[in-house]
Length: 283
Image (cartoon, rainbow, N blue to C red; front, side, top):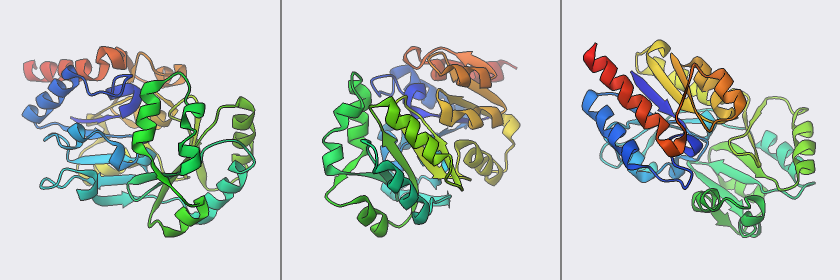
């Protein structure tokens, strides 16, 4: 069994913690030799350190599947990881998206080289784009590096562009941006929060990277379990041997899943993993 799990809204609690029960589930997987693979829209540096450092974690999928990394057992940090696969977004496509974003009051988050960058004035306004959700706001701030440069300058200096994100606070901006993006070829558009738009290369997705990594490890998708809560998780849930939506997932995600577990704040992922391990042990 190989376990893939989204982080925000799925494995992590609403206030972005790894619960005690979830830590116990990681311990149980390590004891049974089961791989746990965080599979997130976050940049690699945004995966909680207690997850990356756990002995059951040897790989990670980040930036919505744009990057697959191997965790160095001697340096269990994002900066110590080795890139196994990446599906970069081209700078030309990024500039097309930037031209669209500039006509609207949105952020322009650049995920690259395992980190994420945001122009400082927009970083300072993040509370406007994520109102009423202090946990998510704190997480976004922690995951972003504010920079004193224009997006074109950031795009010119980074090595590998993973994805882009735009946070909006006016639904009119959202609708116009999505309409304009539908005319840009070669990209994939999804979201992992109600108030954002995420753009990757058309071949980048959590499901595609999950399938690639399983094959690389010599396994089969039939032996995988995947957990998720939002639109960027749907392909992964459909590809897995068992796709599990948490109870707080979007309606479309629950419909795409094989089963629905308890919510992220009720340790749905941990409970399901422990139940599965117990069933295998007693079989």
